[in-house]
Length: 137
Length: 77
Image (cartoon, rainbow over all chains, first blue to last red):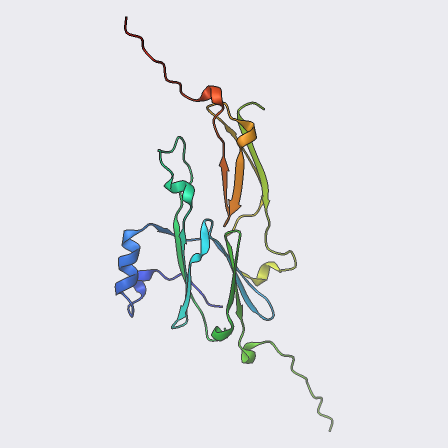
């Protein structure tokens, strides 16, 4: 997959809502693993603190968008922190999909804050073996 | 081990049967981790609670009775 991380400001078609939302809240880029299997691509992303309800996954114009909002009740507890080196952050990342991915069959699973996305290859893009006929004169 | 919190765990990686050349991105860390945190006050060990949800561990450590602040009433002579 010729995917790459796309900064939101390069999205000329939808410049309005995304930019406004991002300026109000803090977003970071989650680390991902992307690997290829014979059936397609697997994308794994670390999204600690993001529940299923806070996760927004979209595919539009061959652009896969992962947006996660992290939340935990302990962070809203009264009193200031005694010590803090980890803060809850929101996540945002985009990938360009090529046409070889069957976008209607993308599936996602979120477990222990780890998102696993399965992007199956379109049938015509799957590897196939070509039989070689020997021409006998 | 007084007033000290130990955490240890392991973050599993990608299944080993994936060849290195199949990776487009490999950014996530994996492996074992350990962390020790010295606590500033005495803890009521019977009341410790831990919750692991959505990849976040939250350990609640209630203060021991004798570590809690006490009010001293002042008598006026």
